[in-house]
Length: 64
Image (cartoon, rainbow, N blue to C red; front, side, top):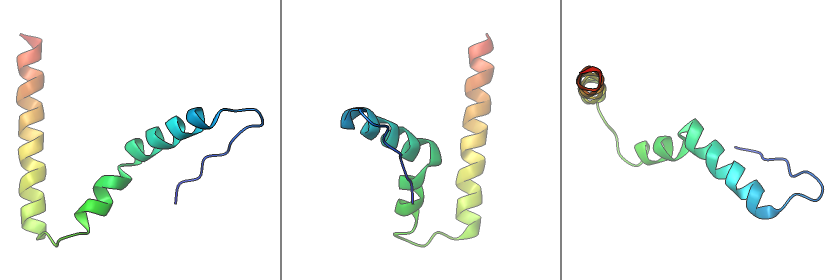
């Protein structure tokens, strides 16, 4: 559970913005969505490998 302390006199919009950033950084929403259906370990590894290959190719193309 994420907790955001609100300072006295702080606007609620600013606190909500901090909360949204914290959710995004901790990837909490991604974890909740992954619990909706079961994925095999081999499938998860395959997806992770695809992402790593894509990132590597992307970075290699950025250098040129």
